[in-house]
Length: 150
Length: 413
Image 1 (tube, one colour):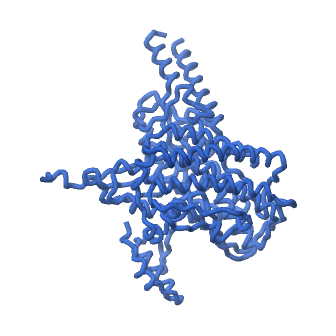
Image 2 (cartoon, chains in turn purple, yellow):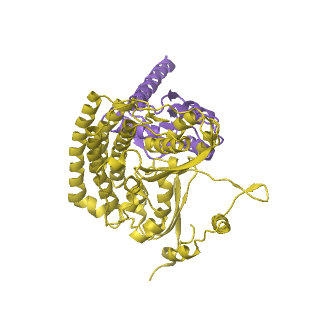
Image 3 (spheres, chains in turn orange, blue):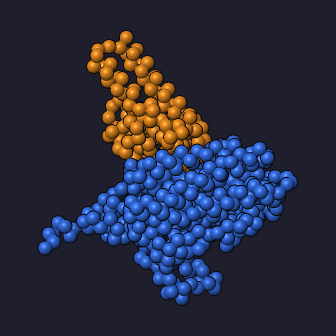
């Protein structure tokens, strides 16, 4: 692994910028995401910073079963993110559609629209689970970068 | 002399993805310089089709689905729905159950108002307040988890009562938690009344006068901040509220600052109520047996959610599934007033004015399909829908024409 790519990997893993996007959730997962950023759980200690625009984000935190209205917007937001990008589905709805599966206005889960890197189940996913999921995603990145380097 | 370009209107779309707003909704703001001349809201991004889904589920399944209308005021929705079904089924719940429902409802109000205070702080660039309130909010989240087993979407209600009883040790814990919360609330009252930057930033922003609040049908803290003393807990007491001693907090400022004062005041009232509930908690069972099938009938149920009046309508047809469920969430009533509040305001005030009604768009996104009498379906304009409503009532001998002249409604936006 060259020195430059080592530094890039280090920077990427130590400071992932996240974008939170509600894809038709009931707000429960969204407030738990904010709670994960608040002092009790404080996900910022892993370098995670919440950003306002997809162009600055490395990780897209999605909550909700993806309504038909939001489907195209979600795809556009995903396309606006620079590579490499990762998507985390927060909550059972985002993973599979959850209780809303079969409703006329929802597709069942984020992965029906865009590729997902990590799934965090729970209705809603607790802040502890969100922190755990994000850390696991970062760990897997570190591992895959090492493997790619040989 | 004003140049030509300055007098032109500029349109700025905000959302559906926007850093200031946590939920997908879209506002179209028309500006003249820094001033807002026109604003429109577009909803529907969060529409999931819950009302229709309820019709395909049994009552008990629908109850858990209704709880997920909104994750912040989930207990409000589930209680309003359960109350309506109990009225149709003719169930009388035990007193202890109604006390436990009220206890969870007030704890939920505390968590929701603290959440709002933090979000409001964030919108005006006062992130310290966000971190403080969200830290303190964990106290009440722990209490909710202790009593119900869940931080959010508590699942405590069932038809005929509640699913869990509370024991003496838990009540002791709640009282300890309330002591901390009350102390912190008193600190926030000091912040809200002494902090000059906060007062200057929020005063005269998003004005909604008393008459406008009544005319536009505002509910909850948005209306109470304009001096409209409207609170379902007092006006039409449900659960255990008839036994409790509390005040309806109102303010006269009629702006965002007034809404802050009302919510902070309600935090104290909620702490007071929680103490009374624990002190007077009656003994007895927490549930009565509910039938699986509910007889034919219909009921309206009103509930004072943290954001305002929440209305549920349920119609049963004798089977184990509801025939129709209708939800009218408080934000649906308040969002009409937002356009009025934004009028002639500054662009920089848009996030805090929208946040000041404590919007919950997952509650709001309902849809009504219109089936024409001549057959077929289609889109009805607002004016057509209004006219159809007036004619429907007139055919049944109800005429609001004179009332309309008194409360002249503005042009639909």
